[in-house]
Image (cartoon, rainbow, N blue to C red):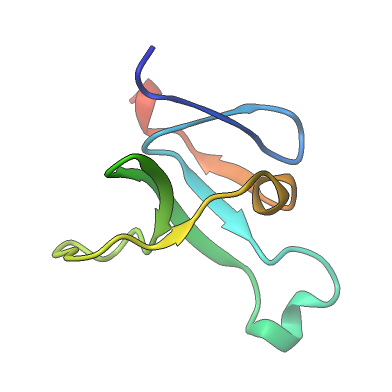
Length: 81
């Protein structure tokens, strides 16, 4: 399936293109401004994280790595809507 990625979240669930992830979890997240929600997109060859409210995207976002995925939780699945 082309919507799958090679990444898994904190609870070992497969991350798909279009999922909304929540990062910055835990007791030290308050220093960084609290939890953050990001949408998973494919930009070129890379899997990237962008703001889900950004409708006019001109550039990609932060690249998703397994270390970042290990500290994230899936909060919305677009593929099952």
